[in-house]
Image (tube, rainbow, N blue to C red; front, side, top):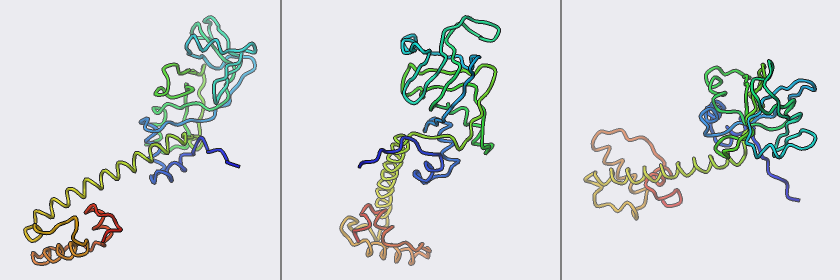
Length: 238
């Protein structure tokens, strides 16, 4: 039986996958390189808790039980109300929400500096704005939600995409270093006649170390694998 893949990762798991620190992941979320989500479950049987901004077409999805469900979340007790002393605008309101919601990156900026294990929000959305122009905004009425940092999750596809991009960038950087190093080696008079593509890497390394010694330059010990990598030859080509 094929098991389903996980949809979300915890921040410490993301740090392990990307080979970076927990603080790095928080920073990536704060600048919208990654997008943080959390599970929210809040209700009141009698009072409206949330004012909702949504596209007119989305209102058609509200069922006869005054419920609005979209993907990973649901809102309950959803209905239109006129402005009152307690309700700030004419619009849609809900008495409860339950499910996974997106936390905007600006809410995480203070955590990058404070290191706190929780923070407060007074609004959230169903998805981050890069996905759709018709996101649904939820605004808390006269209260804030406390979100635990360890409750934050990041979608696995985002993590995997970023990992691939970082690997691609690393490969490009290595290739560029190989080009630059090869050019610099050819500037050495004693190395000008050496074919850097076919001469054994061990011989190239030995010649460069010998040239360095004649000029009283202390050359750092470098293994053949590293030489191969930065000459663009690969570790398997000695």
